[in-house]
Image (cartoon, rainbow, N blue to C red; front, side, top):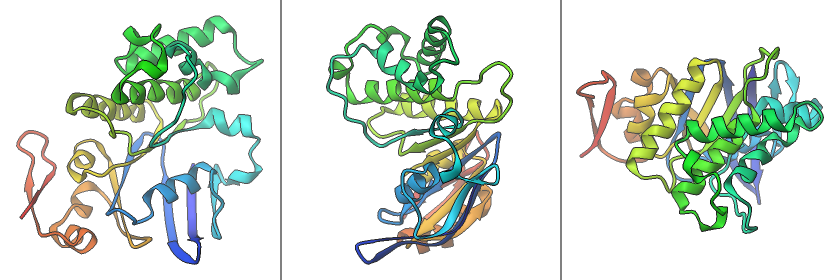
Length: 260
């Protein structure tokens, strides 16, 4: 699957990541948490292939990302960035269809339209299909962009290789309801075999939806493992420099962080 080994990355003489190892597995939601400046988005960009590490390597199915043809890679992994500027007056359905560009010559327009419609339905945005994208609110745009990346790695008949979805702070601009809907959707994707990595600011959201947490601090993986093994008061206090208490969620039986 997607594997990062001993990643190092430096920007303008500053070490952003130092010796990071990470593996994304099919049918699993991994949440990447940590304080601002820890290197979370940089790590996601290295995993996507948008950045090249100064040391170490990223492989997909044992093959370096750089060796993958662009269209083949695009059909396996999709990335939802923190923000994406798009000012042309495209309809929402046209924006989602952009996610199907890697299937040119491999898929019919009718099938692409079906996939786009299904992706919009999944993110509770089917009613936006004919709207002009720049007129949408920030939260609506985020949901449309999620539909676009989902259309990009939509399961195709005969292709049983699991997709990879990389989400960079996907709950930005979303209200409380849609934060939970988005992460519940990511959870359902994982149950269908997709490997999901989500960069999240809120450890409590991560605890509710992730199978595994990766706690990044000062460019290194401070802890990785199950939610219970990572979300402990000593580790959160060490990474975030914040006193906390850890209780149990009243209905989900997972840790719940309370600042003191």
